[in-house]
Length: 163
Image 1 (cartoon, helix red, strand yellow):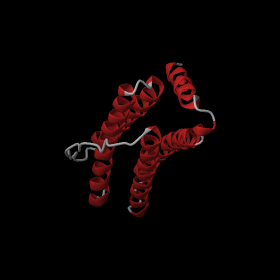
Image 2 (cartoon, helix red, strand yellow):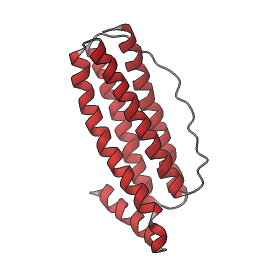
Image 3 (cartoon, one colour):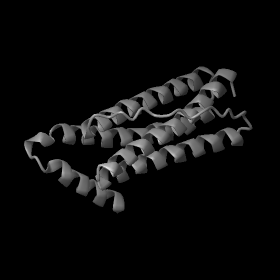
Image 4 (spheres, one colour):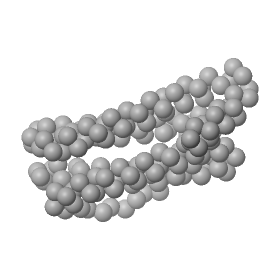
């Protein structure tokens, strides 16, 4: 594997661990304000991020590449409200998707077909998360139409996560 590609791949793994940490913090925030559905939703994404990190780790091990373990940074958690948490989450996922596409581009430039193939699945999974988050941000920003809609949405999300 090309040196630059290997370094970027390792950074991407670290980003997944940091993302999981961020989503666990968001889950905790929602637990603290008794929004179990939103908490479950964020926890589900956090676990998905850990799974992505594990999958990427396994891929580097399979390729007999060097793994670099960096610090996991404390996430910002000074959210103003529910809408803010979801907006931050959406922005974060868009950033992650951008970083994955950059990694894919490096794989293309170095003609590493294995990495390109591997990353396609991660990009597709990320599109599903982005879609969910876009819908949530839209629903929350438009919840002022019916005052109880946030609570109803929280309960609906909890039910979805349970199934």
